[in-house]
Amino acid sequence: MRLSVREFEALARDRLPRYAYDFFAGGADDEVTLRANENAFTRLSLVPRVLRGHRERDLGTTLLGARIAVPVVLSPTAFHRLAHPEGERATARAAAAAGTVMIASMASTVPVGDIAKAGGDDLVLWLQIYVQPDARITRELVGRAEDAGCRALVVTVDSPVFGRRERDHRNGFHDLPPGMYCENMRDLGGQRGVRDIEMVAGLSWDHVDELAAMTGLPIVLKGLMHPADAVTAVAHGVSGLVVSNHGGRQLDTAAATIDVLAGVASAVGVPVLVDGGIRRGTDVVKALALGAAAVGIGRPVLWGLAARGGEGVSEVLALLREEIDRALALTGCASVHEVTSDLVREARC
Ligand SMILES: Cc1cc2nc3c(=O)[nH]c(=O)nc-3n(C[C@H](O)[C@H](O)[C@H](O)COP(=O)(O)O)c2cc1C
Ligand SMILES: CCCCC(=O)C(=O)O
Image (cartoon, rainbow, N blue to C red; front, side, top):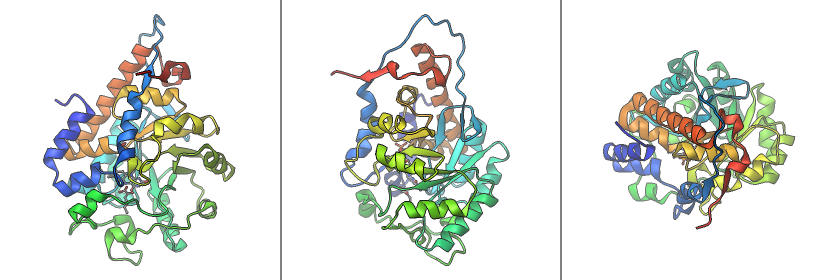
């Protein structure tokens, strides 16, 4: 039995080839932001309420019209078949069983339609997209998401260029091993898997408008950190935001996401999610207190998948569920909606 997300990481590290572990675990440059995301939670303290007489807690909430059983969604991460042969299919089954949203990566190693099938009717699936230089390719991806029954598109905006991950350079990891492919890019004219996905250096609000014009699906922007950008996003009609620094994989020395969350959440009226460094139920409660509608987890899912396939992902989600439930009980909250900003403060060391 594994007792924490950290123990799953240790198990995954033992099981994975070095290059795969490093790809999952690593960040950009000196990995300052990678570490900061986790460390920032330790600088925040909880100030619990007591004697409120709640016997049970309700962990459920609603996101873009979908009911979810826990305030934790699966952030998009690339290449799940590097962690386990079943790849994103196993992840989808675990997300469906836990009753939460899976945001599939555009760089998934199983096509989005097959992820949807594996998850079944219970899965709330969103697809993450990097806008492509050729609008026809972006349009094709949007069509694939719609055909798969995705209920939202998540546009990643923190990557006009790719962050430099030194671990990958050291390991010579630049493309997928034979037999694995960025399946959502299949038959779109490219042949080189990973490198078929291009970043758009001139990414702008015009691209967001263009994408919105291609679909009736709600659009969520992922990778915003600044309140002014959040306000502009809402003016462009987006339905939600994910405060994210890409798990420290893009701009190194970017602020920890939990430190900028409240500024963004208080600037807009749409649901704001946050990801980066969430490893404990208490981290989730802190994020809720600072204005998040829910949180996203990236690496913890990969650690579960590498350790024990879909079962491992289910165990990670169950662990977090239990930790959130206990943290709510110990802060005197009967539901995620009762977590108010007065429950958290900066710790004085
Ligand atoms: C191995 C890996 C692959 C990722 N791939 C993507 C991706 O394809 N698209 C994307 O928008 N974000 C991607 N991310 C960023 C995650 O969506 C998320 O922002 C980040 O992992 C959150 O931090 P955490 O891992 O500390 O939970 C990736 C992150 C990791 C670790
Ligand atoms: C082209 C693959 C993108 C994956 C990604 O976003 C990441 O590794 O952080």
